[in-house]
Image 1 (cartoon, rainbow, N blue to C red):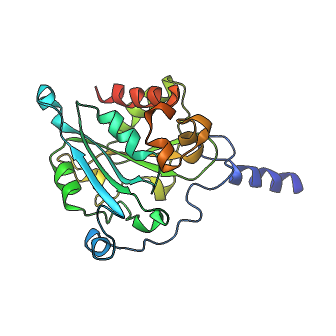
Image 2: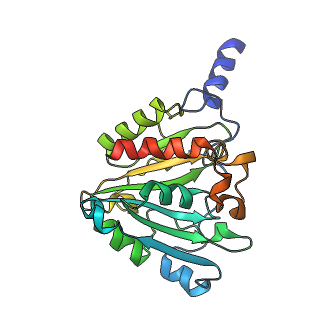
Length: 239
């Protein structure tokens, strides 16, 4: 009996990637302070507490307007999702980020994906056919959870990441799955996108010393080779 119980416990603490997780990917998530962008904007000041950044592809890449990389929990909310989405978009794809820039308390600016209704983001995503939404998850093991309703593209992204040497979870927890039609990543022209949830352990590998402070991640000189290898893998799946 004791042996059976030990096996059950081992299964419960093992992450979906097949390795033990030091901390759950969703544990400790608090309820959003704001339930919509209008609610947030009524209490927080743009330019002081948050900023919105976006761009479309250059003229040489007009045909690539169909792809958008977004980071709706960017800046210091879920670091370094802004930098990942920005580099992935480059000059070829559309890019959007909602960034927390407060000295502290940036978690208050988190609006869950199914309620994120900032107008500029909705417009940009609505004009795209393929959307990749970058997020940060809990967990010290370096792992990525690939979700979203675009299962064909999600499989390609997962395969490209594994081929580049990155761990990808075999299954995705329901709270990270990104399959709700109301999730902003699924509100493009095809009504399906790809949601990437990167554990903290994975994100720390992208910067020297594992430092994810805002000032540190905003300096490209602090990026590791893993940062560029990861983004290149995602973009290969989109090409």
